[in-house]
Length: 302
Image 1 (cartoon, rainbow, N blue to C red):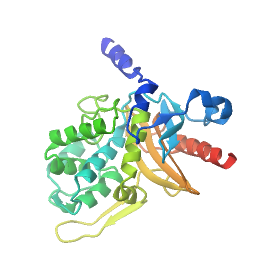
Image 2 (cartoon, helix red, strand yellow):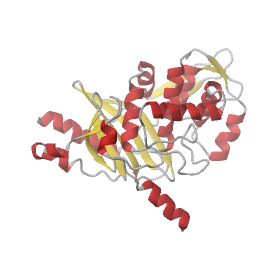
Image 3 (cartoon, one colour):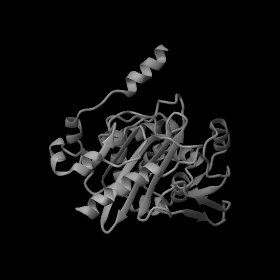
Image 4 (cartoon, helix red, strand yellow):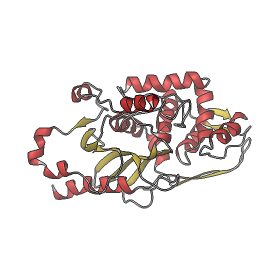
């Protein structure tokens, strides 16, 4: 009971608005309370969002239009892989050839993790592994990239936290490279505010954008590797008009999570929902759809 009380106290912490205003331009800013008299729709917010934490913002400015528990720390599941990708993208050398280590099979089996089905001994480029990381949410691709770009898991995780610090993601900590519940189910965590900051940073990369907006990805068999075919886990792609990414997440502790972005008529909104209700491990897009519909209605009715 003491441990449970400790965790409850830990997740109830909040950061103040002043800390957000001191962050870099990529960091989100909340709508001032004084604006509520002139923007009653923004105060009411979207209906039907059952996520325990959520937010939606203007993707170009980071200005938060609506949120719930914006700064509450929560486990985020495989949204963690957005930071894994960002560390690799900033390191560069995406044509680098990387051999899939034999340990990935045992790793995936141990944690019953989502997988890109990588075959040990196959040689793939870092760019191909990024697709395996982001589209089918491959923990095996995350492991392979972390080993190569750390080099080694410990050094790679340190780079993830250093990047979070540089982005002023002050309520975020990574203890692994894929969001799986190790060493404990709460040891990798973030907030809705911090994840919008992360999403905006990642979506600034043309390579990242070109991967996460694809519904499928095919790697033809070639010298040194088998063929692969991956389907995107993002439920909005192909179903929500204007959806362009970016990443799902799920564990029993995190619940259904989705970091998402959509563009219509030159306006883009980015949002996140954490711990939404859902059945099974397939993340649904109900909360994201409600938030996006609400945001685009503000533009339409302006």
